[in-house]
Image 1 (spheres, one colour):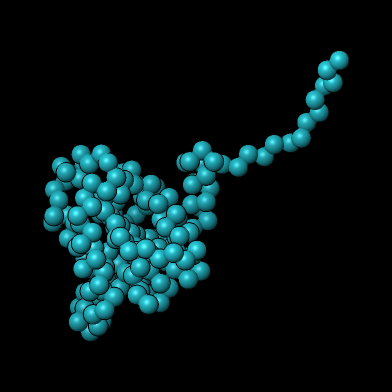
Image 2: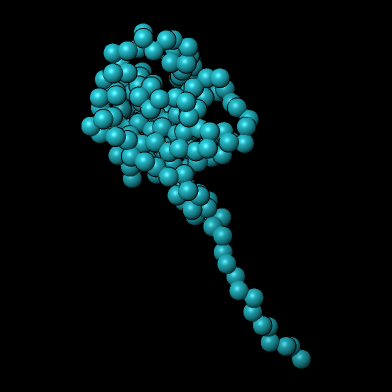
Length: 182
């Protein structure tokens, strides 16, 4: 099984998705992670550059800089350094392909859908190339993570935010007595 299952590139200020990998897994855990990833995307401006959230079998990793954030759903076996190295590589590829004006003016979801082919190539590289070939990049990220560990994001917080943002927050209504109409 691949270690990096899904990746997307979003705008930090509002969570607008620019591009995402098109391969999907249909397990309940994965679909739940995708839902929570979308909620986290809309709140990225509240978090520092790197963050991780652990689920049962999957993890969400986020790396942002400037206007762009890259997010990934990975298996729990995926080392954090590998996930962040992957996200950093995606970020560099995306920002080299699109200028800040295009990024700032994008108004519709998946405006840069063609970037999916690059996401797929980078994802394949990280899933199937041996870690010895990526050794220097991984060592650099591991050092950075020692001195600045990623923020621990809790997936439980997304439940409340998701309900409130979508207008589906649970309301607790007490039974009342209706006056009798005669």
